[in-house]
Amino acid sequence: MTIRRMFLCGMAAISMLVPGASSGATQSPGPTSDARLIVDTDKPGPIIDPNIYGQFVEHLGRGVYEGIWVGSDSSIPNVRGIRSDVVAALRKVHIPVIRWPGGCFADGYHWADGIGPANQRPQGINAAWDKSAETNAFGTHEYMDFLDQIGAEAFVSVNVGSGSVREADDWMRYMTAPTASQPGRSRTANGHAEPWAVPFIGVGNESWGCGGNMTADSYAATFRNYASFLRSYSGERAKLIAVGADTDDYDWTDRVMAQAMMWRPHPTPLAYTTDQPLMWGLSLHFYTFAGNDWRNKGRNIGFGTAEWAAALARANLTDELIRRHSAIMDKYDPDKRVALAVDEWGAWFQSEKDAPSQLYLESTLRDAVIAGLSLNIFNHHADRVRMANLAQMVNVIQSLILTDGAKMVVTPTYHVFDLYKVHQGAALVPTEVQAHAYVEGDTRLPGLSVSASKDKAGKLHMTLVNLDPARASTVYITLRGGRWRTATAQTLTADRIDTRISFDAPDPFIPKPLPARIVQDQVELKIASKSVTLLEISQ
Ligand code: AHR
Image (cartoon, rainbow, N blue to C red):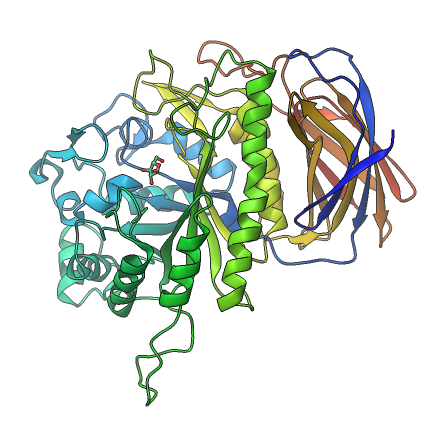
């Protein structure tokens, strides 16, 4: 094998070695290639913000109704209307933050419809999604109760598109004002005396599209106006997240950063001005499908290796998108005070005709590989990416959980989040990767994606994704710095690239132990083709 090309992927240098033939969709002993990794365990980088493992939930299809909310009179076990099986599954993977109520839904949502006695709430219409019924049974109190039950923080997207600054401020007062205030008394009358913490506020959603059809310049002006009035009345300063770009709309990022990052310079410093950026974060939305055509996303089941490769190639673009948006942000914010919040990402394939609800997708091994690859990329950009929210947590697009009435399953993506949770709050560690390329037709990708971190207890964790659907890999890892004594690994794979989860059969994706040998400063492990692996190394 000879070295053909050199790519830079975050902190990892990936050398592409000439590949052999790559074909076939099922697992077999098949070809194997060697990969070499060097890990500088004593050079910790930025902390991986736990919020990179955040989620997004929208009133859409069965995402909220059935997926989370069943009502307290349901035969499905629940606590105050919130289904207990879903809560238990989410607690296990340590969900740090949940963005709600949308999505496109958010810019048509009027929060006051979702408070007060359930039987007096308006029977509304979900204007964003097919004019379906919106009972408003799940509103602010239910969302906060849900967060409490799973131990996550709030990220509320306020209505900019069809709302007003006044409405958004009233919502913040209702949620966060002291108990003795008028908004606090209303909240108390509805069952919650204590103010809630609302650490993150999304100022609109996709204001360039469904959220108002604005130009970057008009959004920047709108954001400045909202930012002047939106605040938390309890706890810390609210972190405002401005609407950022869709995919590669670099001009949007440039204009919003240029015009909306800071207070207008004022001749006399005033009490209300600050030298902190107005925005805590700027968002980015990026979805993966098989190819680059929104109208032809490709099937989510029954696909072949060409669509496997096309989807992974698109997911791999995440790295370039973050690098380029971040470079633009650097012009205005070289110290990286403003986070890039990838607050919608995930694999969005064509829904099958018999899909029981809107944007419901069955879940396959490909989703796990996309999740592993994307999360490794986010980890690599931990200096700028300080939040990411998978779209959407239950029953919609790339979910962690699927339900069918009373039945519930966790998806392959869920297992990836479970394996990767060890990175939350750990320090990114530099990795250098030499691995074969995965080639499929004209698509050429790094065969192996890796990220590594060191946690507070001093344990090293590496997550390795083998993108190649046919070629296993023997990985030799050189550990520089420290004495490392034990290594254990778990891996997730399946027989076929489109193996899917089912309500009626055992879960084929449960990660299994994988032998890992450690000799002096080198670890050796053999990872299967099309797999996601967690390696834990201790001193
Ligand atoms: O996640 C589905 C939709 O995708 C969201 O409502 C919108 O923000 C995006 O276009």
